[in-house]
Image 1: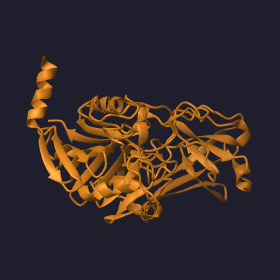
Image 2 (image 1 turned 30 degrees about the vertical axis):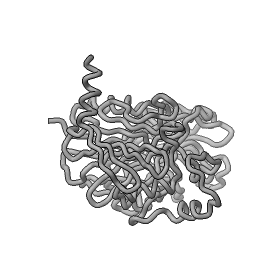
Image 3 (image 1 turned 180 degrees about the vertical axis):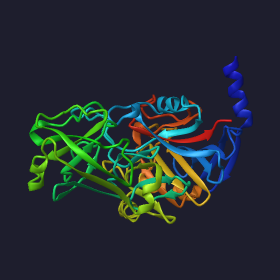
Image 4 (image 1 turned 90 degrees about the vertical axis):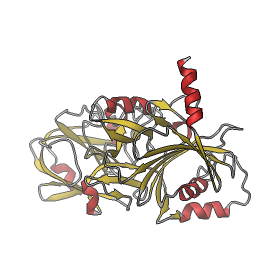
Length: 397
């Protein structure tokens, strides 16, 4: 009876607002100051979106990110990550959506590994790869979405090597990777593809704008080394033919320097990376627009091999001078919601008022949670374990 009354109450308090291209159905009208939640029924095609708008001028509201299981390896539901964040008691999670891209399958033990930027509570956990599709918030609350790159070096003796990756699986072109305890228990590397150097003396957590001396404790060639809780591991690709690699021997020492560029990114407290910038200065990404315009026949709701052009569930993050937008579009469900192409998603974000936006992971991962309730209808018919999440949190009284 209580559940029935609650549903009736929500129906009675729902407000419908007509808008070009669709209608907004207001949900949770008394949630908290500075937050507006609504379902957007897009009637240009059959698609249902869920939108959270956060006022940037409300001092009690905050943008945060979360890592599944508090480490890179492994997956977790968005609700579970939100519940873990709530246990800290300083803030409560109001809205949560799924985060970025990475390895969702096992892939030789690398299930859970992210493929783009993740900074959480000031800790650099993974570095940017799609440098255009990153969003961060600084200590002072400034929003950043400029292209960002990591500049990192390892000095040993008279030699300096470039550090390419942090806490990621071996990537093409990434000759040296730094593994911190945030990855998990071990590196999951293959002994035939490189060697590993255990180092100590590095204060953790790793942060942007980082410079510290280290000492080589051991050099290993078996792969999948255990990561010391108070140290880190440098992995060197076996194809790296730099003579400086031979300088790494037990007892040797050097310095690791790391920073993000442009320099304002070094003050970021929370950041996330997606795949493809959707909007820049109020304009749709030219690559996305060109692909859309080149399509000979547009069929509403059609799935396609090219994911940019396929109608899929989508998740996006956008903002303008006044608001932050978290958007989830349901899909793969005929007569309810067929999903969106990336061009359509970008167009709707413009209609909603966003001027900057990035594309986050979609498909069965697309999840929209309000106060511990999954509000949307994930295409997999249940909430999926994902790699990381995005939160809007509010200060507790």
